[in-house]
Image: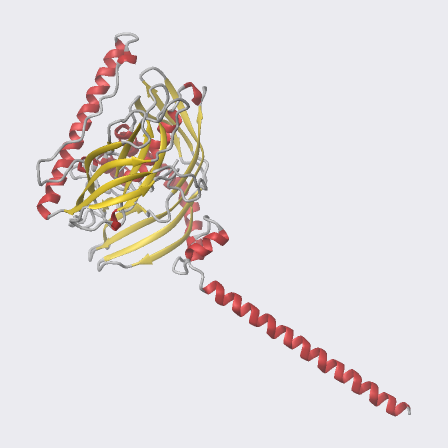
Length: 497
């Protein structure tokens, strides 16, 4: 009897073990299937889906496998940073200060660095993608992030006061595109092109603090500095604009690397519809500012007390890259007592335009070009007529000559303004009656390129000089082409408010 009971117990235990093992294996198989389905779903995610899940600060090499991690390069950069920082500081001081003078807004007589140090914290390279779009060139996209401890103080002089402004909590998030033109002579690279990719849009965050004073003492000063920084970066470094630097003393043709005018965009601002009212009493007094490059802006006349204004004004803008550039249109409410208020902004991609065809386009106004802004309120619309005309080779050359001429005229006008301001200050207290002279756009005869070509090239002589100095600092002279040639320019980040 005991023997039979033992056999029965053994059978029961064996069956239980087999059933438990089968159940466990089934659960494992189900988990593996679920994980495989999840991995398959992750594999189908595109860049925008990953950004929604992980946020905007995700390193590019996570989003795209072609971005390789470069931990070794970050370790090397941390060792080299004290030397790189000193050379970079010298380049920035010698090259950016003259350009700040060209970009300074009306009302500010001088913008200079009173203190400049990039600090002790090196930038971080999240990933690098190497591509080859053209024979004889290598394109390298660098996912660049920097949250350092720089000490940057900008001396801001107006006609009535002076105030040092400190940049604090500076952070930079951008993709740097570097194009190497190859050569069969040592050092095997004849020129380097540097620019910031427009997508994803460059982000430069900072806080402005007045040293020994308050920003409220000069109303609108903070906005002026923000606009100047955004315009400088957008107009100089954002792709398709770029800086071209020849290397190694190799005599090489870099004309293919430089950005050239491609065409003319004729924009007729017909009317506005249902614009937002910013006035407590009466209606807004709207006008439109439009541009492709921030350094050169066109403006319609002001129409008083009207939310459905009709302008019917035509402007001509120069485009350097139809595939990547946009026409930016901003509508403002004129205010004689305070800073003009922005009623809305719109972006018209040049890639949407048909060549040689006049198109009537309705563009909806937005509170900002930043897609993160959740304001869904209707701000009205602008009705436009737009024509894109591609340049012939002769028209492009004519546009280049017009650029040089207009840049020189602007520079002379600024120098004349500075001289008048200095004389007024010396005269004792009459500087407040002097205003900055803003030269009008240079026109072009029928059939030629329109205004707007004249801003490429400003300040680049300084770049050539400073790059040469930096080259000597690190033991090799690097000669820049900018002292005698036009600037290749750049457009980033548009950086929104």
